[in-house]
Structures are given as structure tokens and as C-alpha cells.
Image (cartoon, rainbow, N blue to C red; front, side):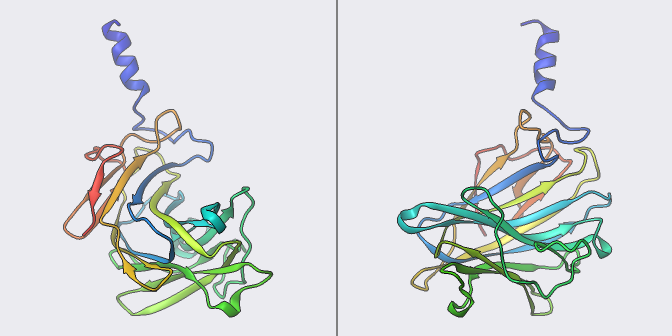
Length: 259
């Protein structure tokens, strides 16, 4: 391979400018929990340390993977804050997902307004450098309908102690089989750097015990899949910081300890 071919090959594996070329137009990076067993609740604290400054969608979410009888995959749902230019102050919350066959989940009517009248994305004002607790949990039994389990998404402002129930989603399952936190960014790779921090992940087992993942594994959307090469997930003194438009200090597949 010539010098020019080596340079071109290197460029082909890195995207640090322009928009992501993925099918949905986003660059995503993930932190998957290392935690076995069946769960009825997962939660984590999210802080937007450095908010976006461009009118593009940013989504930071806790995702629960659901399982039915025999451990069969039943679908997944994500709860998180959004920087969404179509909502008041570009602030919103999203709680939605899909069943295993790919159709969108149905749920209860949210008490929160929505500028776009979207059942999943609702207006919710959040502030930078303020901790918010994202919780996905089995709703009370009386919320079940048609044999489906109701799963509730709640965002708690820890500074004020105010909990906001987004709504309930209905799935044909009674347990969570896994969890992951992620950033999904629809901005240019070279737009101003944005940072969020994840901390204190915890879960509740089916029998009521509180457990915590002791490790998180990193994953970044590849160049071939349209991702940006200048995203990073690295620990700080509180938790794990996910940042855009920065040098990647932690490689994909790395295992990071939780605080």
C-alpha cells in the first residue's frame, strides 16, 4: 500500500466534520450495563453539563430491553431528555419504544403538553448542570390492560425533589433483561462540543433487591454506519461523561467502572 493509499484508508475510517451519514441521520454512542438477572426497575442520573448551541436534535436516554416468558426478547423503550428545536426553549422529554417485531409501543395519554402533538415527545423544561433521575419501572397492577404490563417512565428533578411521570407504555412482558445509556446526535460532527454525565446507575430485581452494575462497556457507531469519530465516553470524579466533537480517549469495547 502506497503512502497516499494509507492516508485515504485512514480518512475512510474517520468522520470528524459534516453530518452523520447513518440511515436516521444521527451519530450514536452507548454505555451498556454489566448486570445479569431479571429486573422490574432501572434508573440513572443524567446531567447536561454543556448544552447544545445549534438548532439540531440531541437525545440522551436510558434504554430498557424487555423480556417475556422464557427470556424471549419482547422489545425496548427509551426514556430521556432532548434538545429539540421544535419544543419550547428546545427542551423536551421522550418516552417511547418498539415491540420485538418493530411496531411502535402504545401507551397512556401523557399529562404533559407537546408542541408537536407527539405521544412520545413532550414539553419538559430542564436546566443544564442540574441532576435528573430517569426511572423505568413496572407500573401498578391496576394500570395493566388487555393482558399487557404497563411500564412507567419518570423524570425526577433531584435539586427540587419533583417527580414528573411522562406516561405508561404497554408491553407483553413482565421484566427488564438489560439496560444501556446512550447519546443520539443529529448535529454535525464538528458542531460545538456538548457534554452529558451519567452517574449512579441502579436497578431493582423481581424480588425487590437493589443492585448496581459494577461496569459499563462502551460502543460507538462506526464510520461505515455513518457515525462521527470524535465522540467519547470517559469517566470523571462523579460518573461517565459522554462528549461530542472531542478527541476519543476511550476506545470502543472498553469496560469502565461505575462510581
